[in-house]
Image 1 (cartoon, rainbow, N blue to C red):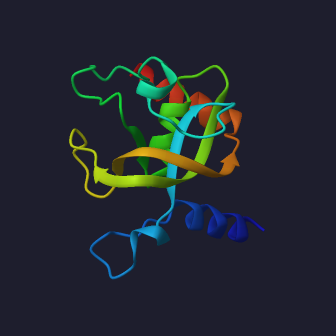
Image 2: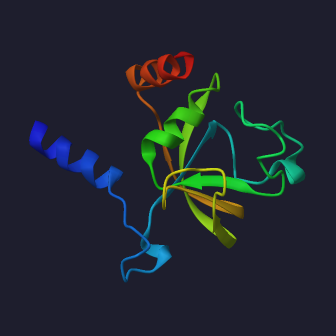
Image 3: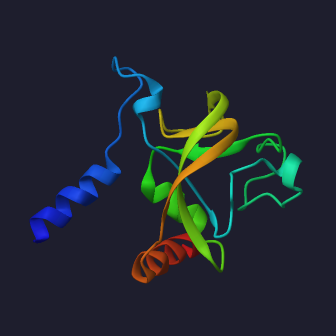
Length: 134
């Protein structure tokens, strides 16, 4: 049973590098935020405050940020009192996040359609919140 759970977790965390021949639509994208969204829209549309400690001059208010890394999305979600992990499909042009040092992990797009909701286990949230404090 643990072996199956390990496979499921690995499958969830699999990433496909853009340098491969697969199309971008075969990637899995995630967004971490507060629960209750019907779609992932930019702050310029919703009027919401920017999430996290990233300076306004770095974050574009007309874009949403998505990632191929589940752990990164969970980290962003953990900043909310009612966190949610969204699996999304980007809508509009998708671009690499210019302030992210990693390759093929963080992206920005005009908006994103929610395709699945994933609750985050309490222990995982505690670990993410602890990591933010360090």
